[in-house]
Length: 53
Image 1 (cartoon, rainbow, N blue to C red):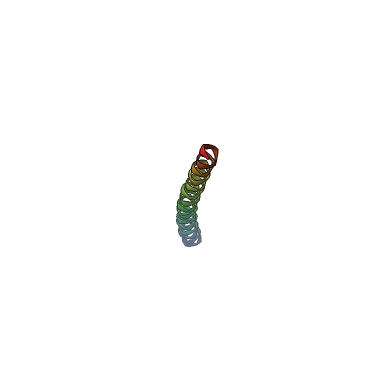
Image 2 (cartoon, one colour):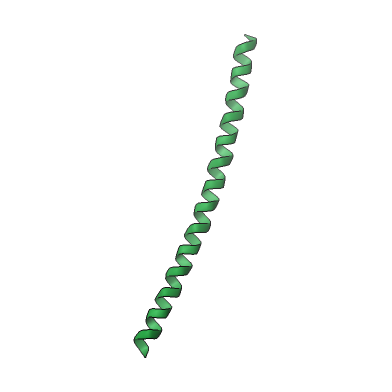
């Protein structure tokens, strides 16, 4: 019984670490998305400026 409890505790720790990692990955993806959107916006502005010349 003691071994089962220890295994369950380890599983819980692993689950928490996975959740933390997933949350971190989501934040990184959000930052990447913001960066890509900003780059696209700059490129669109540049294309507009070039077409106005």
